[in-house]
Length: 275
Image (cartoon, rainbow, N blue to C red; front, side, top):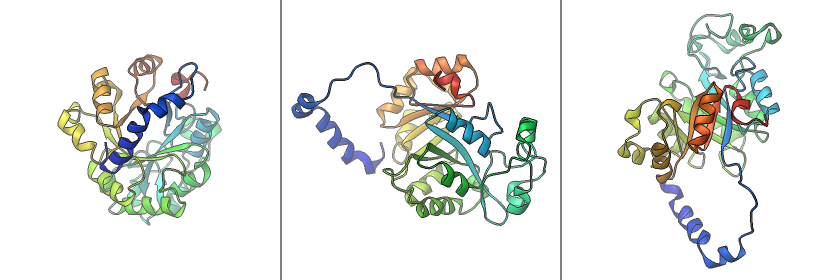
């Protein structure tokens, strides 16, 4: 558990088990839904990933969070795209870091998914924050931050300008595969929850979990390494576990049985039939 939350957690536990709390706690009926559905790059199974179309679809499907990837153009604009190059999901070529925002904005980021998405544009980080904060949670991944020196400060500034650097405002989480980047974000935005993305069992040892828990609130592994023991270990360190990326009913059913805290999926309706 992050050091900055230890005192608050201790107080909460003391209150939870106090005679006063037990005497006054309201009765509950039925099980509360405790697991979040996160639309991976938006509802990317149904609309072009990381576009307004995909995020609007996720909002329509009533997911708990949208997951977005943030990178930076040659001239310093924060943009939302997964790959380091634009080749796969646009009609352009080249690395994001080598293209100006004007060049990126001129690209068609929707046609590859279907004619109905022709003309969909690459979104900016600011546009996504302005359009969705307060309506849906936003899980922000810093994609390859090592390519963009100072991107942590830029992301922090965008959040601070919108007063989104306090947890009581809206649901914001920041994650990355780059652990040093997340330590930096934790220092810049101490009240914003941090997630570490995990793709290797090498990062699931007791020592690794103990180290992550000093700055991270979420331990987010690829679903292929999720086990009941791992979920319990993560929880024992005061972290939540969000796992990725679900693209089949079978994997969704498996993870639901593992009692993870969130499932990151291209198909939100595979996780929660209400969608």
